[in-house]
Image (cartoon, rainbow, N blue to C red; front, side):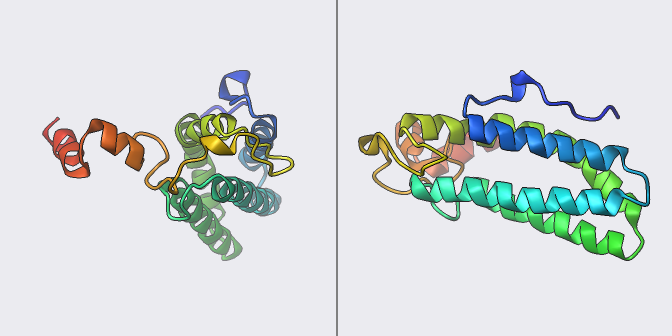
Length: 175
């Protein structure tokens, strides 16, 4: 598999978020190209960066009324836990696990960025959120209630527009 490369197509027009994603890709490349003697150190650097990266996005979501249990935050927790389990296995000699996880993360990060992070970036721009200062420039655009679900197609506001949750679930299972 060819190592994931950062490209402007991955950019979300939120400079701090884009910079963090570019750093993630670079650290993931370091894991991909590391030899056995250095792969664990490269992985640990990726895990530390990912921990800070996810915490940063989670703070942004909290500041702009994304509920703490939304699927974006839950995905962060799950991925980080799996990455930490990979660290433990590699520390016990299973270095191959990190290489496999690295390949899986390449596909995951593209999807996560294009779906979850793109929705978050759109939301942050809509409310005028400045990620560097934490200031919300358009507080009147903040949702009245915390956003549950994924902050996109499954948010409460969208359910109201497209029918009740049960109707939505029935429509997707019939398809």
